[in-house]
Length: 401
Ligand SMILES: Cc1cc2nc3c(=O)[nH]c(=O)nc-3n(C[C@H](O)[C@H](O)[C@H](O)COP(=O)(O)OP(=O)(O)OC[C@H]3O[C@@H](n4cnc5c(N)ncnc54)[C@H](O)[C@@H]3O)c2cc1C
Image 1 (cartoon, protein in one colour):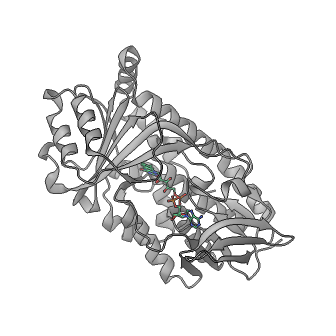
Image 2 (image 1 turned 90 degrees about the horizontal axis):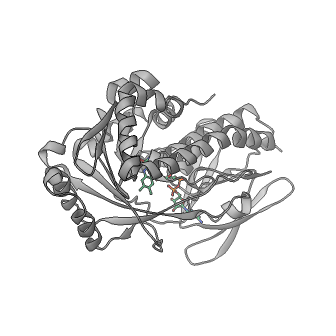
């Protein structure tokens, strides 16, 4: 079956869905994007874009637009939450750009999403329909039928030669298209907020990504919005999953967490976190990637296919990589969608599986305490900057074939 003149349908206008739509439109295909939200407003939070992801965005022509809104941090600095001691640093900035040929950016999700959305709206090959809630799909002999509801609940269908399910971690399409298990809560929750630069203590204003590792908790912060604001993330263990995504958080939680940080050594970090208002909470889920995530006329992409924990900062990056690889597979196997989807799955499975496992592993080691934390800290110091660089070459050095 070949891609006919009917549009490809992408379900979900998130980071992955929009990147895929843009990639395919630039390859000359027409694409209809169905998005359930009517207002496309992203959560107030930042996202790290490592060179493996930025490379794809640059190749699509977004280097300048994203670069204007992002920050290219100088280094990753890993510190101990218990006493603030620096354990390791890894150069980012110009060093990582030289090493991997693409920048390491940190940016507000809303800024990244805005660049993609503006480009999709300006692209003649893309039709973006909001307020369309995809509910399922059916395979037919030579096409897929996408089922969706409009704002007033009216059911509709759309015929397409290829459906791409990019509907996120709570995907409706995952169980219909793939054979994977539902994502499971992994007993972590993330609290996030963004604060203006003026609220950041002077000594923490360096343009660095800083990760503080502690017992059953870690904190990450970095500048966003060209350095005009800071993204704060606290991750703690949690017994139960909250219903919802990006929920307003009770302030008492932060107070209890701060009470557990030794006061004298960490005054700046406390002040930084206390500067945050409007904290929001995400219960964290992941799932093994489905072994099969395509049917003859449908496939999955991004969190819908392989949700990962955020401890390697790679969920969005994997969605962006997926978009590039899917585009390439459809180009190489033009006229044979089944072969293209098989090539796409084959290329992506080992990589997303490794990212999922390494993210889980970081989740454990970031939160070590006692003797095993001492060993981790020694290893981090032993690695040094070059050791850390080498450890992540497989990840950041990725390029589409
Ligand atoms: C605390 C935290 C920190 C993170 N940090 C990073 C990081 O630093 N770097 C990184 O790369 N990743 C990070 N991630 C992961 C990243 O946010 C996700 O992996 C990424 O957003 C996935 O993109 P996506 O397009 O697959 O899904 P999403 O961005 O979730 O988009 C899905 C879209 O589909 C729409 N949708 C959902 N259901 C339907 C439906 N039925 N019909 C139509 N539309 C639908 C949604 O409204 C949304 O627009 C982090 C995640 C968390 C929780």
